[in-house]
Length: 110
Image 1 (cartoon, rainbow, N blue to C red):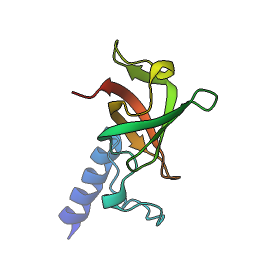
Image 2 (cartoon, rainbow, N blue to C red):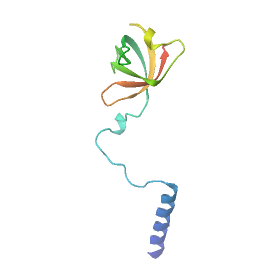
Image 3 (spheres, one colour):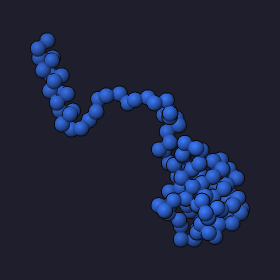
Image 4 (spheres, rainbow, N blue to C red):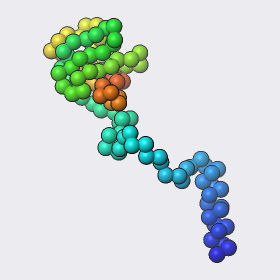
């Protein structure tokens, strides 16, 4: 039994040195694995309108609203201010808790 305790102490010490956590993650109930909000999504959507003041794009498909940030990367042939209703674009982004999609990339749909 003494060897077993020593081995466990050594293993715990080695894990602490490497920064590996053995604690179970807290379940806050906010997201489940199937609803992980950090997972990027790629969608082809149809533009309904663009709100330049709020930097959002309304689209026909779900999620309905795409948020654009200073970090959003656009193709050279796509510009927020020049998007027109009916234009199809490919959006890569992260779903937000309010249901919108925060765009990290916007490309011309091919």
